[in-house]
Figure 1 (cartoon, one colour):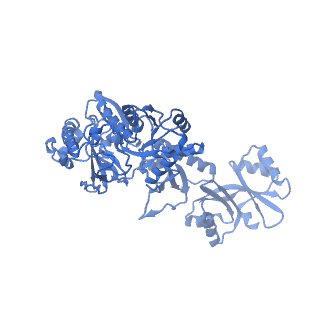
Figure 2: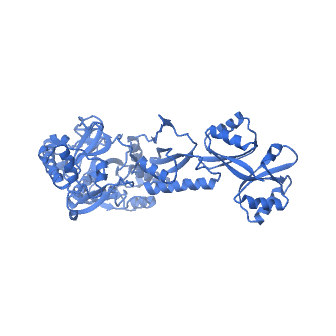
Figure 3: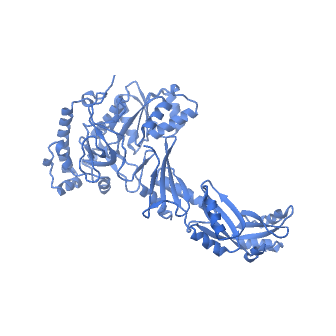
Amino acid sequence: MTVKQISVFLENKPGYLFSMTKVLAEHKIDMRAFSLAETSDFGIARIIVDDVLTTAAVLREAGFVSSLTPVLAVSVPDVPGGLNQVLELLAADDINVEYMYAFLGAKHGSAYMVFRVADVARARASLTASGIRLLCQDELSEL
Amino acid sequence: MERYYQPDIETAPREQITAWQNERLTRQVRHVWEHVPYYRRLMEEKGLTPDDVQSVEDLHKLPFISKHDLRECYPYGMLAVPLKDCVRIHSTSGTTGKRVIAYYTQHDIDLWDDCCARAITAAGGTDEDVVQVAYGYGLFTGGAGLNGGSHKVGCLTVPISSGNTERQIMFMQDLKATILCCTPSYAAYLGESMKEMGLTPDQIPLKAGIFGAEAWSEEMRQSIQETLGIKAYDIYGLTETSGPGVAFECSAQNGMHINEDHFIAEIIDPDTGEVLPDGQEGELVFTAIDKEAFPLLRYRTRDICVLSHEPCPCGRTHVKMCKPRGRTDDMLIIRGVNVFPSQIETVLLNQGYPANYQIIVGRVNNTDTLEVQVEMTAEMFTDSMAEITDRQRRLVEGLRSMLGLTAKVSLVAPKSIARSEGKAKRVIDNRKL
């Protein structure tokens, strides 16, 4: 019940981000979610795609350095307090969120959050026990 | 009026200088032959004995000494007197087996101090002056050399050493320092700091500065002269030949007089070793003819430079050398510290980085900057920002302990470092020197 995120190393200079999106566009890769973390000289682009292996291969061929990271894709009720409810469960079990970012599905009124935690198994158990729905890789293409 | 510390020597006619050189060189060659087996072997390999050197005309026959020889001889191999006759050592800043230890007898210290005293006098120093020595003290020769010279002239010497900029400026104001001795980049930094504190040049009693141990441009001289309201003089030297004071600038400020009664300078073709005529650019070679403990004959400095025997308006008759125009090896001088790219490579490899790197040297506000760019690799990359920045921090630490300098470490995209003929260009020096 985890999703593989692709993290790509980018220099923090004009044009670097574009050079990556260009490769993805040329190969008609559809991004489900995207987040960018940066320092003054480099950044990490974190992307969620349907076909992880193809995307990783395409980026490698184009000379990018990337890695795969298991993350939790959580379906969050798109109502006030929706995210709060999820974070409360993680906090109660003393699970630290390293980073997270949101994305929207095309269908129905659901929002999704990507969570990166150190102990994926424990976080997954904590959330599913309380009825929170986690997406698996195959479900991404149906969103 | 031009003042000299030792007028009889500094303005001696050429014939007199040559006579001193002839006498001292022949004596020195015999001294080295008798006491330094390493150099004796080099001479024997060329079929030479001390009798083959009767005058300066014969100097070109002698073998060169390079930094490599000094490493081979570490630590006592070049010592030419019993150790008990030595009173001090100094050492170069090199850290990866490139360290050179220089020995001094009291006589060696005295002649070195005299050289520095000539430099201070040429910069207008007298026993009325307060000399703030902001070169580092310790193994580095800068502090000790100017300190000794300042004593000889009779100046009030402030041995403040380098660093602690606020205290430097406070002492300068409170003790009314008139002459500042330090690296040109530190002088520029002091000037900027004073400006930031709202001090104008006329609020600081400084009148002159003696700046060396690193390359600096004419533009930098102008800028330092303006911000500090002083005359800025260049000084040259290296640990292998004593330290600063081998050559110094006079009021003409266009080249440094080499103390020819103690050192003979030659310019050679760095590829063939042939001696080049006056005015031609080549590698500077020094022979110390009066030092006892560590008397290097024909030491190759790796500095590219030109000599001039043109008469100087200051009245000194000793030959002048231009500011060094570059190096024949890959050594960089950054903020007064000698840096070899191989040292940086050692740190990178020790920390598991690939040898794909580039060193970028620049100058911002007259202070040298050092940036080391490393290509990101798949092995090194992780999704964790904290892990990557931690790696960067460890590399900065490693470089600092190796070089004694703070470098900026940048992680760059794979294959982004330019390669020509498959080899990366390791060093980009953007300083306009």
